[in-house]
Image (cartoon, rainbow, N blue to C red; front, side):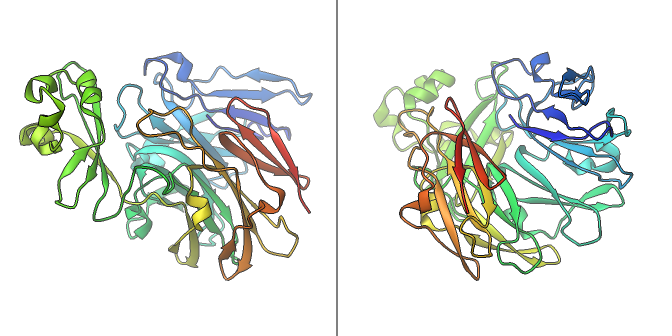
Length: 399
């Protein structure tokens, strides 16, 4: 799901950590163990026998970030859990792993970052010194999550409570740091679902996910709903899809006519819904977070060209050589249900920095155009490398 090269064992070569995730296996499968490959200094990698991220448990992980969190000279790890297989909507956890300096990692989440437990469905995270105190703080985003900030207080991570970004609940896919306004502090670009779909969300009319074993068969039934103008939540699922998951709906709604105006409160009893878990999303725009200092950020939606499809990959650099940071974006999502429609409207987006955090999207993209499901980007030696699902890596030269 994600990987990172870093010097895990302090021998001055790069080792490799790989997140193992997905929903194809049982939540108790060893296939979900993350992998640490140790470099022998000659470019040969050997799999560590450590059970990662946590001993004797298995987690579908999605993101990894490294930093010397305790300032002891070695690199420690944060790992984010994406979801529990067959239990979509269940709160997942982040894990903080302390390095002993030799590449052996110990889970210190309970003692050093207890609030990471069951924080949500994590998709992306990064370390960044937000308060200029010399140590790295932690930012986390995820699905049905806000932008969470954990401040590093002498190696202990504390969830920031007076953080307005916590209320910005989105379907966030990725977060990337960059000083976009040239003022010396770090701003952030955050990729979301976008605005070009049947899904709409706002604070007054959020998307709500109800998760509960509604039919009592031992499996979680996640039901996605939209808020109508009348204040009621209605399922996105068509009647036949809902029946396929919960057979009892057939008896209550024998035909489409009887089902067409049924809200979630009509379909299930108040007692059943009271026991259901609920998650809300109130924004689907991809955004820029302008750093105002002292953990205060101003939310600025990216231009409309950046909202045409899902955003999974972001890179920033001075692509046009004019002295400021520009942005490139990629995304799309093909394998979705027909009634939703696949997300394929992005051919890559180049956002040219005009100054003052104003960005323009040139029609020709200054040569940046790419098809497919973009999932990651990296910049090396004035080249932009773009990876795509089931396709080759694309390489763009700039400057």
